[in-house]
Length: 459
Ligand SMILES: Cc1cc2nc3c(=O)[nH]c(=O)nc-3n(C[C@H](O)[C@H](O)[C@H](O)COP(=O)(O)OP(=O)(O)OC[C@H]3O[C@@H](n4cnc5c(N)ncnc54)[C@H](O)[C@@H]3O)c2cc1C
Image (cartoon, rainbow, N blue to C red; front, side):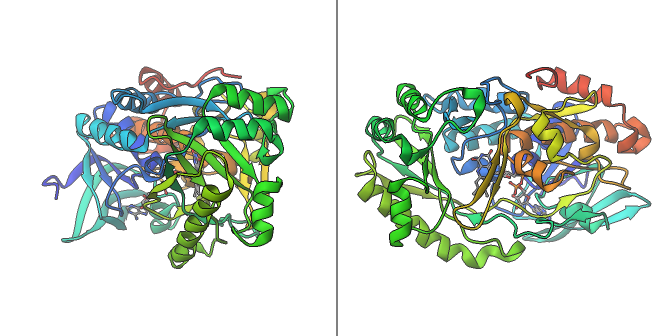
């Protein structure tokens, strides 16, 4: 338990956004408390999923800063950073060994003096007018109260904003929320055999969806093979996976999204399982998802060249939730702005992932960003309406559903987290008279640039 009871910045939630916020605030010299309900930090960065949204579809880096710090740290482990890999479908995803990433996160948090409070949940706030004066944190040893100059809500669902009586946007706007999933990793995969199979059977995979690549399916499959990295989406529309779904051997899904996590171990991450999202209470579907993992692995072993001897080495440490509530902020990121790759002078982070909304079965909306651009996220999307010293970051930033289908990915969450952390540190230091909406955005941008963030250009 920390002996201190007052911090400049309290960050609630230690997924990609919370890690970005804590490290961004600490780099400004703020004292930071990072509170997380789970027993570790990093969220989905520990699963082996590729970090998306950090490179645009042209292959240009759009997110740096904390992300680059983490990569530099992880790169000390031989072979840990595979790098941005093109899937010749829509994206460049950053592939990193998750164990190395976890160690990198812990190392940076320690070096920057961030105080961790794990297995602890922020359950209450006491407010002075429109500002948080203190946070109540339920730990294994009872409830502790911490005061702070500013709070970052990186809970993924706007929990702090909700406790303050702020406005939350429903996840689905009248439709079903995106399904929940459990990702897993397999080692002992023969990369070359698998890629040769895809080269010879391009219809088995999702390929060449983004016009910016300007290649046919066959050419895309050839380039994938040449690249040597198994970043492949086996398609439900192809005979291989489609046949298995039709036979009932595997559950209905859009694709098996396969990405490399270690060349040395012949290891990949597989994002394939899905069950309709029944809201916050989705944990009861875990056993069903686990069964899907077993059947998916069996299908890969039996039917997909290169996977004959592959074994499951890890199953997601938590349920993968794509969509929950979002916060209504001073500004709202729209799908139109995302798809047009809009730039704005008050941008404090960039996103670059296509709009990606999963349906319950084999359906999925995937809309590429115009000309493979990146888009800017204004500071106002990180400032909850009618609140003074609270910022929001990550999946629950202020956005409409379509925009969130892009901005929810980890590269963008790290970037919005870093921006919120810097703004929170400034607030705690008295900037804007303690009101987030009065902070000078030029100051936030200047400090983010000094931390290595990318804020300008990149199409
Ligand atoms: C199946 C699946 C596949 C995906 N694939 C990719 C992919 O390939 N690449 C990619 O970049 N993104 C992917 N995403 C999206 C991405 O992983 C998430 O949207 C992103 O990690 C969200 O980060 P976050 O920090 O905003 O939220 P989270 O990672 O959810 O972090 C929020 C944290 O807050 C904690 N918390 C909540 N309430 C409290 C509280 N009151 N007190 C303390 N702690 C609290 C939670 O325990 C949680 O750890 C995928 C998502 C899913 C579900």
